[in-house]
Figure (cartoon, rainbow, N blue to C red):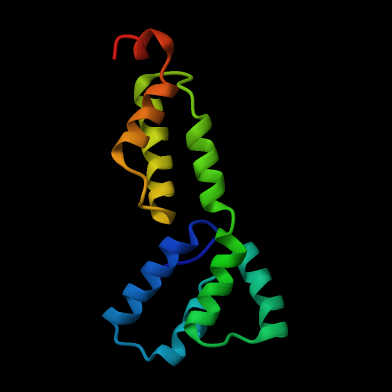
Length: 132
């Protein structure tokens, strides 16, 4: 079962749901099973959350997790993408750009190819972008 360390709650949610479906687990057990696999900071948050709210059903539980641990993910990824500049090698820049592209697309798949190509070119070193 996937453990949760507080990063990428949307990906963790998808993995959890895939696991639940593969093993045909009753939905009433989903929050408890997922809660057993929360590590460090999320486990501490969960302790307080359970005291105040209980676990609730799966939609309520996973919504609380995503609100707590993913609330700023989209804004931060978009900001980083808009500010990304090539600092070292082109390969490293491409890797950093693709990571941010995926993060942005996880939250908003409406951005078109033109937006991403424009952002990619804006971040390249001038000696490279002028040639492109």
